[in-house]
Length: 330
Image 1 (cartoon, rainbow, N blue to C red):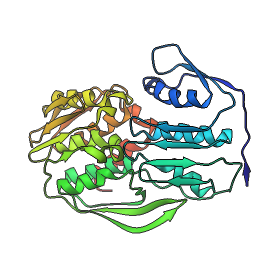
Image 2: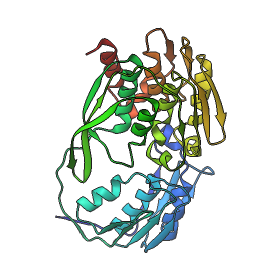
Image 3: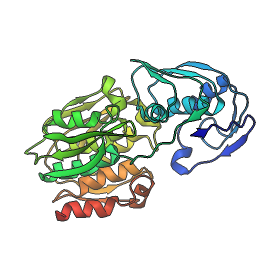
């Protein structure tokens, strides 16, 4: 068993990498401040920031947005401080943290709109295989879909809070099935099978499904550029505070390569076509922009260049080699 070591007083100054430093941090600082920590910022928001720990207290937090990062920060702070925390969200965000804590023996209660963690003194040991990331898998699935080829990816995490994009693919006309479904460390895992796709159709994406696919919107938008009809993405203002403003980055780059797209305050509209897409893509050092347009650039006939291909190493170091294997039919 693992005993929780509590350090009541600690000061940390965190800078983070370039992409992390652009992320808003006050929304994490606010609930932790109510718990008893102290934060100071050099800039208005984001890193660098200085965190002064203290004797944290119980918290009942109503989050204005569905954010797994905010929720996890609160739960982990409560874990190490030995206090309780309740986090309520407007819609359910990714639940990996509460699943892991529960698997370790922590007293976690999950309701339809909230998570409650009771005080923890001891965690049980856990040995399990980390499932494949469904966000990373989607780029390879999209590549197979655009090439009209079948694909199987084994050992993919299929947590319901993470695979909203799979349901969107099915609405777009992709035949996607899960096989060999099982559990690993409290997480559902399966092998994903994708059948050859004869053609894509435009869809509406928005509402309660957005938290389960927020990181997949760049690649879904690139798929929409090759779909028949119009795809409208709404309720995704969170995209503007990711590693880049992904609404602006996706629409600007789609237009730069010859696709038809417009920005919305909280999303975008893409009108699909089969025209040849050519031109440079400015990634803004955002790994998901690079990978999404890299997949689109791998479609035969397209000629798309990525200005910063190395930025994908933050989440998928072997991406370009794997994409090349996919193109070669390996």
